[in-house]
Image (cartoon, rainbow, N blue to C red):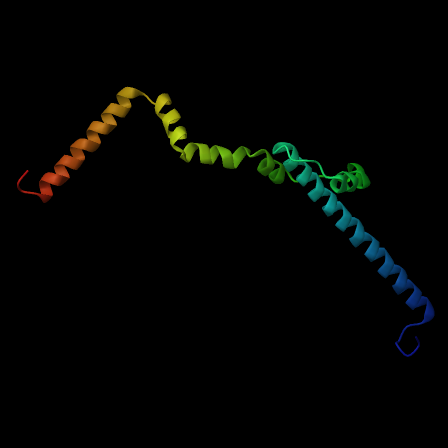
Length: 127
């Protein structure tokens, strides 16, 4: 040890520090594993899949330390992406039509028709 440039006390302190760091890393790793298990449990509940004993054990071992990020919970609940998909779908567009003012919709359609007709007349002399 003297050859490595450390005294016995320094070496023992170094070893103690390494053990503490390893324990911290292990604790963080176990917390992440529990968060993932919690997320999987939420997904299983959402899609009515069978529960996993491994995930339940992991969650119990972590206790109350589990904090799943809200973005992940929203993804599981499907709030934001589903709304966007709904707006882009045909049914979503139909619902938007029901909410629109029919007079405004008629005016917009007529204006589009007049615009297309005038462009067609510019391009074609037969019309």
